[in-house]
Length: 265
Image 1 (spheres, rainbow, N blue to C red):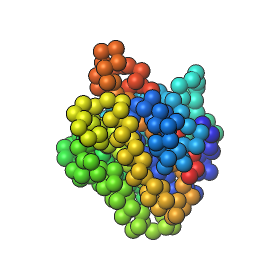
Image 2 (image 1 turned 180 degrees about the horizontal axis):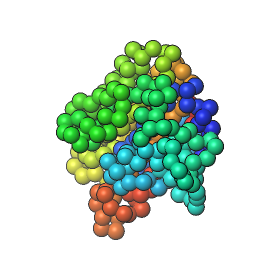
Image 3 (image 1 turned 120 degrees about the vertical axis):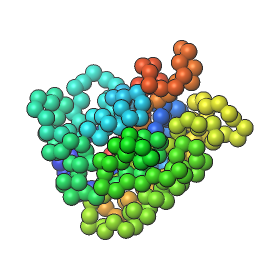
Image 4 (image 1 turned 180 degrees about the vertical axis):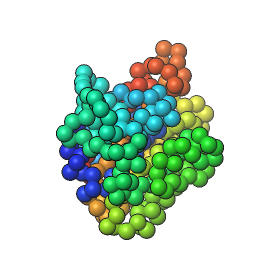
């Protein structure tokens, strides 16, 4: 994965941050190799990088992400981070790390002049409960509605439509952090294969192909308004019976190993 001096990125580039909730590394790699995700392939030019996520379910992973701890390369480190809070003794803060005086990345970017926007997907972003308000509350604007959620066949299209409305009304001179939590990979992803009632790597791949088909307008609109830095990652995987495990919030490799990419679009 190419390294960037984030001190040259922040302030000059818009940032598109996408989490593909629950996406397994093996599923993402297979779909890319088979040419089934052409829009992601246009961004992930060198292929998905296998990384280790800092959490094994959505809340834990995103709490770490927003504190600057993105998935870690699955090779011996230390690995310098893109973003880091000012923190004495950090071994993963390098001269190319953008260091902020805030508790979280969205707050740090807001202080640097960014308009920060969250478009939620899974339940931890739904703003229906006090807990569901925590992650969206880190952003200056946040959006969620039931059609963005895990049971919606058109969830990604609806999320992208919301994002396009935001992009249209934010003045081009204002730098933008747009965060999108894509819900379609999360169970029940069997809804993306007719006749299926059980989730599997096959139904997850079908959901990923659907997501891929919806992303191009978003990337095109972001690139049209400013130079664009993107980060795309999964927050965790999920087990479909491997070694007897099902689901996530557990320590199996299919949960901890996630696809990751960042770069200039």
